[in-house]
Image 1 (spheres, one colour):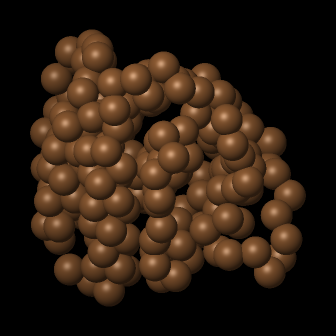
Image 2 (cartoon, rainbow, N blue to C red):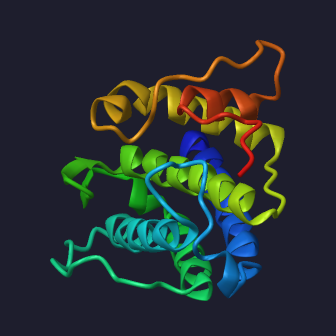
Length: 190
């Protein structure tokens, strides 16, 4: 695995572990909570993230999309397991080679890994904020996440995946700058 892919995989693994810890602590009464991602409640975000992570694991293994509809009512445990499976799949250096089918179509496999990191980091933070749980990542992972968010921000805003950027102080923590670049307010509270 080259250095860039190894670094990206470490960030995916760290965020997958943080998502698994967050999801595992979600209680049934929190499923209706609003999240910083305005279009999702906690339950809806679990469904979205679990489906995305399952698709990501398939993309890493170069398996075609199954054509199945999105799973409904994914449990927090199922999402934690999906996060782990995606991280394991992206541990293989071959996962980053060539192209793969992910989301709306075929794309470079390394870009699919970048989207996986962005989904884990941002939606992991969304779930944590909505349920009062901690979500922290290392400085290295925060830097990689910021680069990923900046790489896809324009396209994500065009498809309403990201909102308008939220101003964040230049000396704010790097992860907060990534949140702001994605249209999230790092100080969000329900």
